[in-house]
Amino acid sequence: MKKISVVVPCYNEQEALPIFYTETTKELEKIPDVTWEFVLVDDGSKDKTLQTMQQLAAQDERVKYISFSRNFGKESAMYAGLENASGDYVVLMDADLQDPPALLGKMVYEIEQNGYDCVGTRRVTRKGEPPIRSFFARMFYKLINKISKTEIVDGARDFRMMKREMVDAVVKMCEYNRFSKGILSWVGFKTLWLEYENIERVAGETKWNFWKLFLYSIDGIVAFSTAPLVISSVLGIAICFIAFCMMIFYAGKTILFGDPVSGFPTLISVVLMLGGLQLLCLGILGQYLAKTYLETKGRPIYIIGKTNIEK
Ligand code: UDP
Ligand code: MG
Image (cartoon, rainbow, N blue to C red):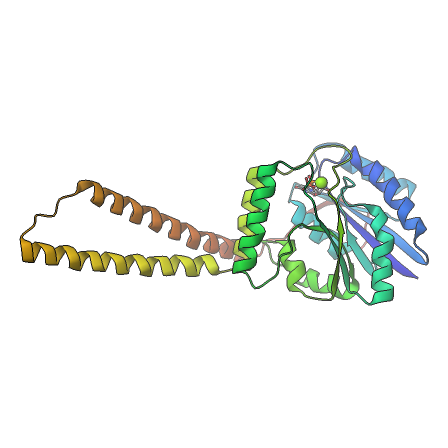
């Protein structure tokens, strides 16, 4: 008998969680020859998510929960779940039923019968999402795949089932700045992608706004590519070269023709452009430095407040 661990990061999901539990259990019961556990991670919710988890755990001993001391973010919640999952297969799922539990059976089948180490999902449509967000999301995937050696699959969800070997590899990657879309691809393993149409959440509301997604995308780029550093150095060299040519040109002009070089506007625009570029490059450098700084502190990825898991 193989055991499936269902890892669910939850932040303010008191409405969605009971529905999720019922629907997912129904699907798990249909899979032949497996046992399962739920590893529910309460990411410092402000509503009754923890109480809901405790109620579920009281009804069903297969429900394990971990409650963080504060909100650490979905990445930390997923890591905690993976670290504490004991199953042979571990599946990451959102609590809002945007990840259809009906696919679980197929995932197990693909792993057992077709020898995949991991079955991931990607949504092929972005229905129900603001068009501007979809546009930026597409741009982000194009950009990061150009500048990073790690492949980041467009539309890939965190909803995926992994074999024990892969989970262990992911747990070993204990970096503080986590970008799981990159980490899960970086570890490798034979992955099958299932495609499905975007589904809207059953209850509660999304925790992501445009700005949060934007910052997250920068984290992704900084975590999986050093190309911005190269670009800023190249830019610096190119501009120095142009400036040098201009110096020779104007010096020559003055010496040969005695022309008192005029042009306050040109001067200002060059100064502004250079100033701006310097700030940009410093900013890029700063991003990497900041990440390195946080990484060297070696802070824990999450802190547990309450749990029913005995170690
Ligand atoms: N989530 C979390 N911590 C956070 C934000 C979100 O654990 O700080 C969880 C959330 O409860 C849900 C999943 O991550 O189970 C995905 O979040 P959401 O549905 O809001 O994102 P979306 O599907 O809109 O991208
Ligand atoms: Mg969602």
